[in-house]
Image (cartoon, rainbow, N blue to C red; front, side, top):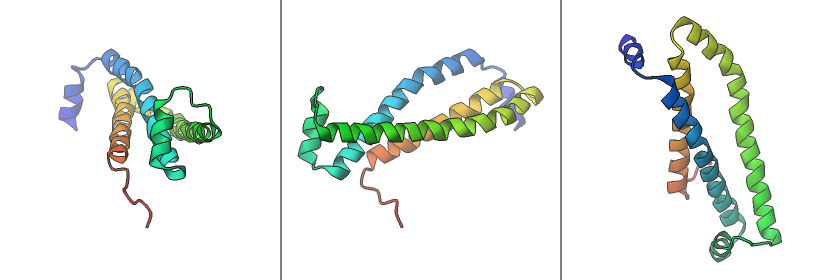
Length: 132
């Protein structure tokens, strides 16, 4: 672990913060598209989903229903990100007091990277069976 802390002294915090906050809108948009496709394909046929996803002004009850589901799941996603963040700030604050401020900045960014890789895997393998 010593070599890891030694290598962190060459990294400044500002680029990490910039890249992290620069990626957040893309992650949110990717989540929205992934959820929209999931809910559309589970409730409707493929033809309907391709038509509704290409038209920008599809003002149909089915579109409103799918958008409502997507919005609800995005809200659940945000809640599951904020609640652990509230508890981890005390732990990461203590770590930053003991070691450096860079390590607490890199740990959440690593979690976001793992989350993005997981969502990419789910998007690339849409027919994966996760139930037992």
